[in-house]
Amino acid sequence: MDNSYIKLSRKIMQWEWYKNEHTKNVFIHCLLKAYWKDTKIEGKIIPRGSFVSSIGKIADELELTTAEVRTALKHLNLTSEITSKGTNRNTVFTVINYDLYQANEQAEQQTDDKQIANKEQTINKPLATNKEYKEDKNIKKNKNAICKKDYENLFGELWKIYPNKKGKGQVSDSVKKRLLKVGRDEMIRAIERYKKELEKDEWRIPQNGSTFFNSGYVDYLDENYVPRKSIEKQKKNSFNNFPQRNYDIVELEKRLLDGTSN
Image 1: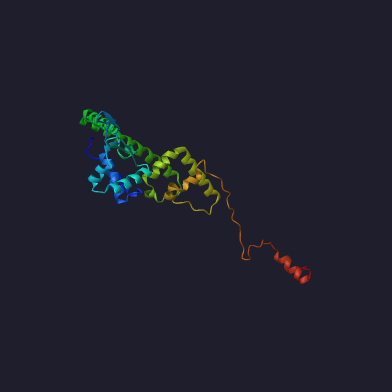
Image 2 (image 1 turned 135 degrees about the vertical axis):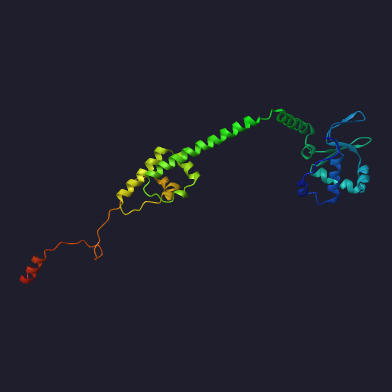
């Protein structure tokens, strides 16, 4: 980086003096005039972010009156943007937060050097041979193949013991992988629990296989399973479920004839 340009953030548009034309122009002018590194002037070191000038010179450079420049500098001094210190021959103006407006060139240079070093390391790193590339590709391919073989085998085993074999094609690979993570033993226990409930509640129809393996099994896993009581069938009659009584018809007729029905 050299002194050929400055950085100007778009945040300046939210700055309180942005709409004040003279104050804004004087501030940007000070940013442009400020030394980007410590500079020696007539045997005196002027620090980075400062510059030597005068109100009259700034007025000439911006084609403003000295009163307009002086008012702008008062604004900037009021909000701690610019300070000025006069001497017998000139004035040293300082942009107070210069390092916030302009990046530290030394830090940037270190960053640039690091990036260059990383690029050189990448460039100098030997490229993998065609054989090495194929071997690496085959390793990854084999790992994927092993994984798929594992979850396909498990799903095939579980499907065989599940009672309702409908919707097999609706069970995706991602679901099968999830079943593999649950584990063979726990999945078998989940299926057996579900089957026992079906045996107790004869009225229940088993879920389609796709429904059970996509989500239904979750309720029957070790951490979620709560045994359910079977619902017994109750015999119903045509009289609103009043209990039925067994009558001896012959005995009843005899009582009616003898007048002893009561």
